[in-house]
Image 1 (cartoon, rainbow, N blue to C red):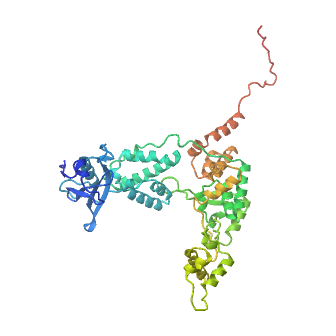
Image 2: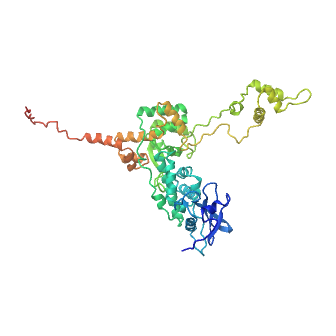
Image 3: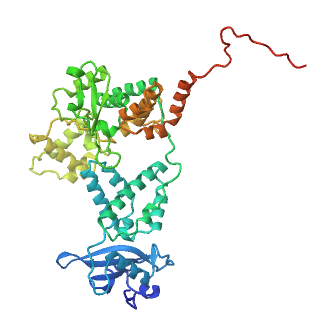
Length: 490
């Protein structure tokens, strides 16, 4: 068992509080290459561990809070003696043995997870979803130093800004990143810290909004009124029931509407990036209507096969007076007045910008901005710059704001009705039209279990109608049967 190291200036809280507040930690040597550091802060101090890296450098990791103002709990807040044990665990070094490489921090675990998702062609948003909600203190913590209380407090804090379902999705992505880190770093022996962290209950209760056919058609009409490109995106979503992320990855080559597919066109839809590992089937054929196929082919034009099939509408460049600033409106008369004042006088003297501003009654900055923009417009336009904005491929979230706008115009609540309502409506429409659940699941790139769990109410309604047609009607008399009425009781 390693011996305990004494340090009079760090052993007690009163001794530590006498130290000056400094970003540079005070270190004490625990073993060969291993140091325990204490950083004095304005509030609770921090425990850090330091070990050797390549070429004479050192790595440093924050791993806990000192018990300066709070009682130690052996988890998040540690005494000097508890911090010694934790630092040795993180460095995996005993007396006489050199320390290993730096323990993996939570930030590094997320970086590795993002790299793994990229290799597996997974959704990189899973890593970004976690990173954006983690405080800096947790990101700098070593994974091996995480304790249940750290993650429990973080999960509970997410409920202030996220729905329970979003909290659970974020929590699931974090667990995946930590599991990957544990596979790569044998010093991480605290899997139970996140494996025992339960998701929020009742978060997966289906809250899918189902639109009837008239509502779907109204949404599509409003989308085309917004722009041709957005209308095509929304109509494709309504017909196929695909996720926006799948639609965004469609290329011209994925449209099959010629040759044998002329009468029955289809889209070779990319599968989603949800789930583990690489998808065995990267694309699935999805039938579409001939009218939609014609619109898609017209929009594709003569673009190459790997060009995006669905494009965002080109950005509208609004050239406002005074560069969009509201303090001065530059009319033609005022601009002519500035140009006249800018000319040299008969005596050869030229007014300064401040004097011109005083004559016009505006700030000198407004005059400087006007003169700069007028000089820029007189310069020749660079050939490399496009004269018109170039249309771009949709990303998986570009539709949010325009869809909320068209949903409101269609008389729907934009807070409840998102573009995913088109997907839910497509699934329910096929279920109620007697399509087998397995076919519906394959068409929408999901599983039968997910269909049964999410749309169980509609499946029950459908199965009730199917079974009802097979029920035995015991009140219909058989041919030749005589009905005997029993006497009524007096």
